Image (cartoon, rainbow, N blue to C red; front, side):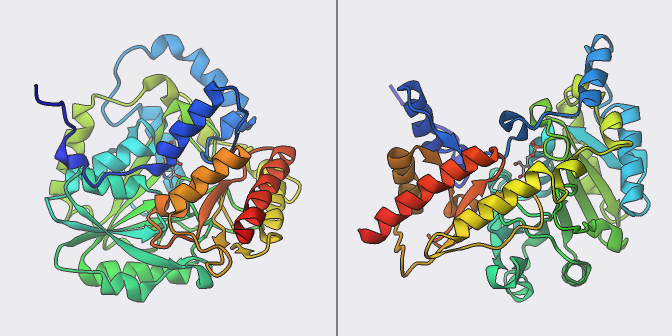
Amino acid sequence: MQPITKSSKLANVCYDIRGPVLDRAREMEEEGHHIIKLNIGNPASFGFEAPEEILQDVIRNLSAASGYCDSKGLFAARKAIMHYTQEKHIPNVQMDDIYIGNGVSELIMLAMQALLENNDEVLIPAPDYPLWTAAVSLAGGTARHYICDEQSDWFPDLDDIRAKITPHTRAIVIINPNNPTGALYPVDLLLEIIEIARQYHLIIYADEIYDKILYDQAIHTSIASLADDILFVTFNGLSKNYRAAGFRSGWIVVSGDKQRAQDYIAGLNMLASMRLCANVPAQFGIQTALGGYQSIYDLTLPTGRLKRQRDLAWQLLTDIPGVSCFRPQSALYLFPRLDPKIYPIQDDEKFVLDMLLEEKVLVVQGTGFNWPCQDHFRVVFLPNSDDLAEAIGRVAHFLERYRKR
Ligand code: PLP
């Protein structure tokens, strides 16, 4: 009998954050090992609870939430999102321009499915949040990676972006604040990206899911607030700013040159309708989340838990010989570099697997973020200070042995 095979559409689809190394970690846990996990940005599993008022709102409305809602989402939730876009100075957003989905993840896939013909190209940062690359491939497109430059605070290399534009290029993705680097883009850089999009008639997809997780008084600017003559699709949600990743609640806001994009918008509407609607109970939390007191700021203040953990993890990692790291201005991650002269890594997936087997610490290899060299890995600084110190101590032991090999 013929074997049952997966679709060839999956040939270039890859998502290493939950890949084979995680499978091995699960097996080890089943064998009774305790693994310290620095691999997934899931705040709730490290004691960062979702704000109580959001939970209460969802619970209170549960009995009204068992039916489907409008494909784009509940009116009150979208109204609150519209108000948020006004706070962020994104011009001319109407209720119809807002789509609520089952997390940003679903909406990334939906936005790419609605756009791409086979062989269309999308510019995606390297390193990236790999779902972007996977979603482009799954939709039949080709991800063309532009380099973000570690020497320049991990900002996108504009010359590399220009060099990678071809007649097939449809769009540019920016992840700001950035996962995995923690970079935050200044206004002048955003304006230059807009200029490129303007010149080559590209859509800008802006993944801003970490826009409130900012350190050292950093300020986030939504790129969509800086122009109205190109099409922007801005992504955000409850998973990170509100520590409610399990609710699977995110949204997109379409803004700018909607006139030119009417056909694409019809495609978005069609796909949003086909999946009926997003999880309704979680949508009842959106209005409460976006209004009033924002507890995330307590966590990112100088005395806040996230800020203290960022500082600790950064210090401990950069104390290790041959390890350097940009000090993140935002988000939940560090993306340290291993000096290739000291750590001549041939296969970084094997490198992190060896670290897991020998030290019971789980990190993600840099190539899992479509980084082109075997010299980085990503660490999540969500575990509490004691666990972080223990975990990074184990990383240091592993690297010490690696240097002597
Ligand atoms: N975008 C980025 C940059 C992320 O880091 C993540 C999750 O880690 C997502 C999107 C997925 O978000 P959601 O939980 O809303 O699907």
